[in-house]
Amino acid sequence: MAPWVPGGRRASDGVSLWAIAPHCVPLTATGSRGYAWDMRRCGTRREFSAGVALLVATGGLSACNGNEGRPGGTPGETDPGPGITSLTSDGNATSGASTGGSADAGTGVGSSGTSAGTGGDGTAGGGSATTGSAGGDGPDIKFDVGNFPDAPGGGMTCAVPEHVPCDGDDDIWHAIGVNCPGEPQWTVQFNGNPQQTYVLAGPLGTHQPPPFPPLEGEKILILSSGVAQELTQGGLYMSTDLGGFTQVPLPPPINPNKVSQTEDCAQNPALIGTGDCSNTIYDQWSQGTGAYDLAEMRMQIQVPEGAYGFHYDLAFFSTEYPVFYKSQYNDMYIAWLESETWTGNISFDEMGNPISLNAGFLDYKDAPNTYDCPAPCTAPELAGTAMEGHAGTKWLTTTAGVVPGETITLQFVIFDVSDGILDSTVILDDFGWDCEGGPPVTVPK
Image (cartoon, rainbow, N blue to C red):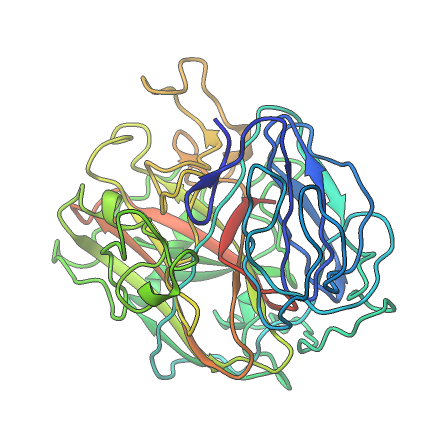
């Protein structure tokens, strides 16, 4: 099955697709699963692993200046504001925006800038976004994205703030690249038990090469529905009830209800503010009986000028696997963005499910189950962690669009579902501002 993309569109096998975003260079790509998207970030050379089979660039790159040609498309002017990546089976981008500039042939994604400030508690805020992802049945294809015109030395200037890692302390915000000195300052607040966060120096686990190294600076943050530090202890069984089996509501403004049965907010912006723009939370949330042991990281900021989006990295793990896999004990992680262009979850799998035990991306299973991993079913990548004998995802990257100058709220929330035992955990790192916008998307690194 072809991958799910924002708006519920699917790409048929063997078709050419376009992905267009602000300040962009369109990429024509064809693959055995026919999925292409624009992940470019300016400022820093990065590589991304596109989890699709045989994704190959088939044409040159040209600037989105309103007069480029597209298969079956008509040249026209473009809007310089933030754009929406919209993929269709006829090879056209149905919506989106860009500014002019020329591009060298090749593919690429650049990244730069992160938010900054001082650590500690602050005031609350909220946020929302959506994501999509691609899965594949062949080898991962990596694209070096350092040669786009908005990269350093290119034909365009990326105005997102520069970032220098500042995680030499144990501040939970510094660990993910937020609130570093001299950078845009977030108002931040942590809600939960202090034991639910832990700043880890170096990679997680003992497997070589490390599947979970720090991606920004030297440290990563662990956020858990239990005791976060326990994730670093190989073979430990993570199951701590921190809330006395007390059910708690989802923190506002999170609203799990769908905005529509047929549309998301990328397709119909009038739905913004009426619920979860991604329509990804409700189906799995409604399977359980409420949230327990909830931990929330909440951040609010005025988006810097020149920033049309942001990114961050995550990986999810759960002790609920394998015993309660595919059951109502479906612990969840939600990244909620509250903005002018999106109110809802921004981190979800290729089928439009939130990041949870029962969703996709659970690539590392270290015990067999009766659904999709018969014996032998092992994941040596989880060695040296409390997830030995359990399951987790790879590093995932979420990107989402914002509007320069608007005030956004972003929430990272994890919780047990239906009871307060058998903990689930997420690791977080590498928040940064981007030059491009568009609907939220999450892909494996």
